[in-house]
Every structure is written in structure tokens, then in C-alpha cells.
Length: 288
Image (cartoon, rainbow, N blue to C red; front, side, top):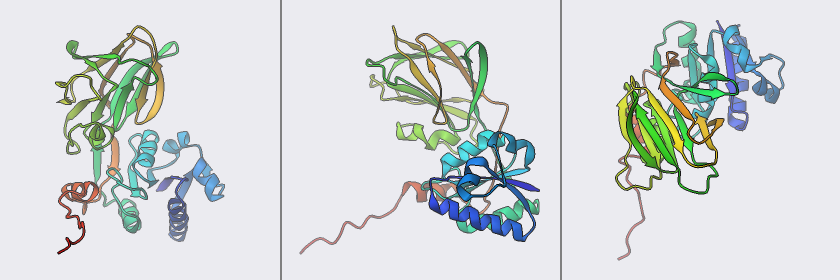
């Protein structure tokens, strides 16, 4: 088995962990290769462009936070991804640094399990051709630098859902419900639920609320504005500036992301820990 390793090079602790991982793999004569930017930071020639790693490796190891895992998953396609949390919240990264070696051993011994995560697929014209873009967390259309409040027209299976006057629209998977959608007031949805959530950003109508829909629905979005251009982001990456009235179509992708599961990790515990639910705060003793 050969591992592809992707490191968040902006974090020194991730770089240090990558060096330990390389030594551990070499001692066991396990083949590995670093993504090019990671290898440059680690000063090793054992590297390849990330676009090539899927064809050269059997599994991926992501050393960083959820953003690093999202980046890795886009290039891993259906290959297993071991997410090691070297960040902060870590909703997607299943394993702590202390659990890294045992997680890799389970993959080497073929005793691991997989969490399949659905993705969004966006059909949009870029240049002279239609392209299919994928996102594990969310697809976001924002007003960007547009000085007024645009209207976002949303259709479900060809039928008008509503016209939202807002700063933007987030379409998130259940996986992405704890990302941008949650910060915009959207609901937390358990992973692997067969739903999407549409969350308006700062809507200018009090009655507008997030809506949860079946992931079998086909979503069409366009921006009703006389001028301007509007950023289309997939998992936080700008993919295109949309023109007024330009239509995009969002649906469930046929390509799933395979995350190596931490069987000792309890989702309810993750929510309590990451979101500080039920934690008592010590505000100091009251004076007499």
C-alpha cells in the first residue's frame, strides 16, 4: 500500500507531525509520497503534484484541520482519506494526533471502516463549456462587492421555491451543515442524512428561514439584479463570478468521499465537545 500525504504547511505542528509520520512509515517499509507543496516545506524530493496522487496512491493522509481535509478529498476522489486533526474544531477530521498511527495500522491491516459522505455537484458554464464542480461541504453564491441587495431565485425540480433578498445563499450537505451554514443560522444535521439545507445569508425578510430538503431534489439558482457579478464558491474556493440571470444547477453527486472512520468517536460527544454544549462556566465567586 502507498499513502499520499497532504500537510497544512501553515501550521508548524502539522509539519512536525509529518516528519514523525515519514519516519514511522520508513521504519515499517511502507511506501508514501508527499504532495508537492508539503514536500517543499519538508525539504524532501519524495513528492508529486496533488493532481497525480490519486493514480499513484491507495489512500490519503490529511494532516491539518477540516480545510486541509476538504482540499485533500477533492483530489482523493473515492480513495480512503485518513483525517488527522491538527486544527481547531475538527468536525471532519476523525482522528487526534495521538490516534494517527493506530488509524494507519488499521488501514494497513485492512481492518478499517469507511464513512461515505455525499457531495454536491454544480453544473455551470465556464468559458465555452459546461463544467461539473463538486463540493463536500457547501456551494455558496454571495453578493460580493455588489452595493445593493440582490434577489436569489431558487427552484426545486423546476418549481419556484422562493425569491430571497439576501446577502447570499448557502446550499450545504449534511456534512457541511456544521460549517458556513451553521454560522449563518442553519440547523445542525447528523452526517449521512439524505438531505441538503438551503440557508440564506442575512436575509432582508423576517419570514425567511433555512429549509431542509431531500438530497434527491435538483436545485436551480440565479441572481436577479440589473448588473454586477456574484461569487460562486465551492467549499470556500471561488470558482466563477456569476452574471445577473445566469443559472446554475446543484444536485447530489454520484461521487462520494470515503473518510476512514474512527469507531471510538461518538457524534453526540463531538457536538458537546466542539460546540461546548452543556459546559458549566465559572464566572468567579460572588462577593459577600
